[in-house]
Image (cartoon, rainbow, N blue to C red; front, top):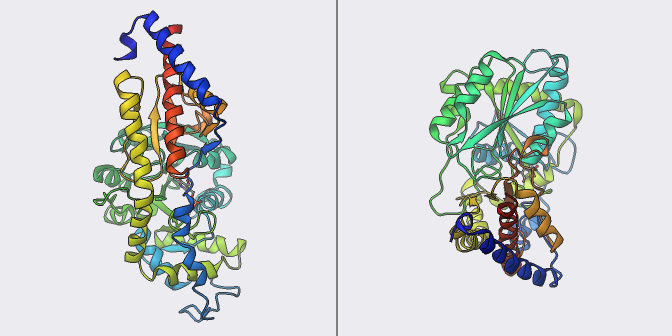
Length: 424
Ligand code: PLP
């Protein structure tokens, strides 16, 4: 029965019942961390053979460089070939970075901030600078813009992507808006894939600021959870068709393909954009880890093998996503005290509690030993205006632990929702 249709007495009894279950849970001494989207041990194991690819003593890149030495700061050609296929750009439109796409994004913002973009005034000299932030979104994106003192404007997400009409309205006259964070494929945390129409409109965007850039973070470009994946349209191709190819920076990494923190990160974009950033890069680094680049190339061989590798990830994590959804469908749906996504890829399930309940749910879970991403983290400045969004990251815990964590989570949702109704 829908909780809001119960009498106060019924809600009180319901709450007491769940508080009893909650205190039983507390006694179990759980200690589980579901705060971040980390791959689990079995997923990490899938790539361990990569550590043997140099056993034959061949450290040479096809360009003649010994990958153990300095040089080739923007990446060896065979890595450019492999990863340009992954993010959908040409081999002269890509830079191979180090182990983190987030730091590549930071670098791109930093270059714009200190040096400007293709001859424009550095953002640091522009007075107020603003970024558009589809919400809920990725907390670390927001931390990058916060670090540079860039103001953030919330843009609501819809099932087809961020509200593109609102974006058009905002950017058309305001040249202090310099960029937008986008996770187009299996967005973090909603798991939304941008529609073709949204991608085409992004590609054709003509902001007042000529140094406006779309930060197209394609972190989950091949991270499918079904056998019939939906591919988001290639934005750089669409931007070229619209004569607007400088509008976008594309990012990706193998953090959730091979090893987070020991993968390979990449950035793509128009030749003009990439040539400029390559120049700046040459100031900051003599060489990234080319051994790791070649390790990845030797391990995968080609992009098709990478896709096959992702199916092995899917086999491990899809049942975990299923478990979470099934639990919510069974325990929460009939009570009408929340809604959630059923993503077809990516790393997260986005749960929306009744307004004003997210912080309380996260607190209750934490006090009983399950750490979730902090409530509010999915919004700029950590401020969820309705205190309702919680990001669930199901990949890391073993499935038995996940089951316990979800049991606790649903109990906490019930208690928080009951408390709210009783207080009204
Ligand atoms: N972008 C998104 C959308 C993410 O969810 C994550 C990690 O969770 C990252 C980037 C981090 O990527 P990397 O490890 O390449 O820095």
